[in-house]
Image (tube, rainbow, N blue to C red; front, side):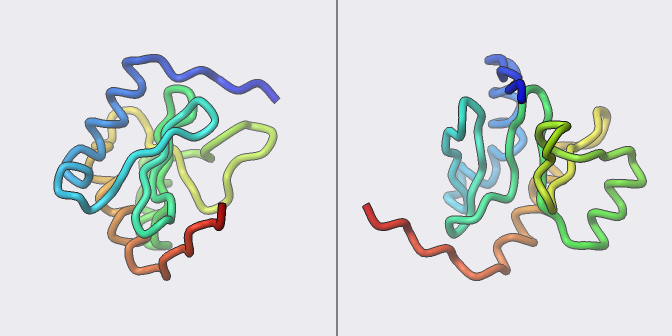
Length: 114
């Protein structure tokens, strides 16, 4: 499985998409396997895979984003279940905000013991 490398521009576009959430303290960005992930309560709501931004949405929002041309998120051989790639032309900040609202309602993940 080939892992695409996110460019500095891709990483900045991701940070810009979640800026309002991270600046307010409602979310945090963490590195993941050479990519980036945005988390709330320990759960990832948005991620970066190469140039693609993926989001975890409620069923109605996922249906709406799919109608706009969203596809699977992650490696073609094994896409991440429950996540969709935001299609080009769609407002990434809007969709990451919707994803944040959806994932915020989920139970918090317990931190892993070290």
